[in-house]
Length: 329
Ligand code: NAD
Ligand code: LMR
Image 1 (cartoon, rainbow, N blue to C red):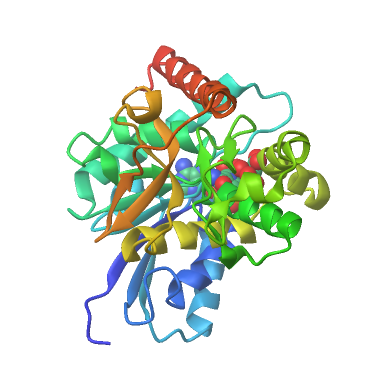
Image 2: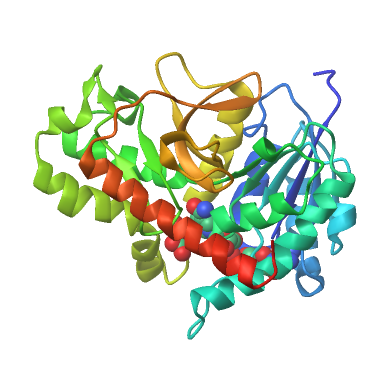
C-alpha cells in the first residue's frame, strides 16, 4: 500500500448519510483496499462540532487506509485538491416548502460549491451529487464550474437502481446478482422510470420472465419510484444507510468499471441520447471503463417506456427552467 492518498471531500459530513458513508470510505470500500484516502469534510458552522465528533470516531476506528481528516466550514478550502467530491449536504424539504423554495435554498449551496470545485479541485475530480433535488443541484454546480469537464458531474440514481434490483429479485425469486442491465431513466424523483424491458434475468428479458404487466405497472414502478417517501414514513427520517451504500456503489463502479455484459444507472450530462435534451443531468444506462462513463446506445424504446422517460425528462427541464428563472444558472 504505497500509493499516494486520494483526497475525498464530503459535504454534509455531520448528517445522517455522512455518518453512514464516512466509515465505509475510510475502510476502503469506496476506492479499494489498496487506496489510502484523505478526508476533507465540509459542514455549516453550526454542525462543525458534530463533524469533529464523527472525526474522533473515525480516528478511533484505526482504519489503516485513512491518511488524515480535515474539517472546514468554507467550501473553497474543503474542495482544495479533491479527487472525489461527494456533495451530500443540502437543505431538506420542510413542511410548507414548495419545490421552488427548495431549488432556491439549494441553489445557494450548489452554486458556490461548483465555483469552489472549479477553483481548487484536482484535475481528475469526479463529483457525485446526493443532496436533493440531486439532478438539478448537480446541474447548478456544473454550470458554475466551466473549467471542469461536464462529464465529471453526476447525480445519484444508484439507490433507485438498487431498489429496483431488490424488488425484481423478490418477485422473480432470484438473487440480485442474477439480474443484469437494470436501468433508471430520468430524475431522482417520483417520476423516475425503472425499466424492466431491458433488464435481464439469466440472459432473458426481465419483463418477459416475470410476465405480469399489471405488477410491473401498478406495483413495481410505483414501489421503486416512491420508496424514498415510504422510508420517510416508516423511519420518520429519510433513507441514510442505503443512500450511503448507493453512493459507495456509484463511485466504486465509476472508478473500477462495469462488468462485461452489464451496465449501471447514473445521472449524467445528456448528449441528446434517447431524445433527452442536451445538457440536462438525467439518469441513463451507462457503462464505465478507465474512470469514464458512456451512455449505452441503440436500445429500442417502445411507447410505454417512451411516455415514462419523457414525463421524467420534462420534469427535469421544468426544474432547469425554474433555477434559470431564479438566476442560479
Ligand atoms: P441530514 O439533514 O441528516 O444532513 C445534511 C447535512 O448537510 C447536515 O449536517 C447539514 O448541516 C449539512 N449541510 C447543510 N448545508 C450545507 C452546506 N452548505 N455545506 C455543507 N453541509 C451542509 O440529511 P441526510 O439524511 O444526510 O441527507 C442529505 C441529502 O441527501 C438530503 O438532501 C436528502 O434528501 C438527500 N438524499 C438523496 C438520496 C438520493 O438517492 N439521491 C437519497 C437519500 C437522501
Ligand atoms: C430517497 O430516495 O430516499 C431520498 O431521495 C429521500 C426522498 O426524499 O425521497
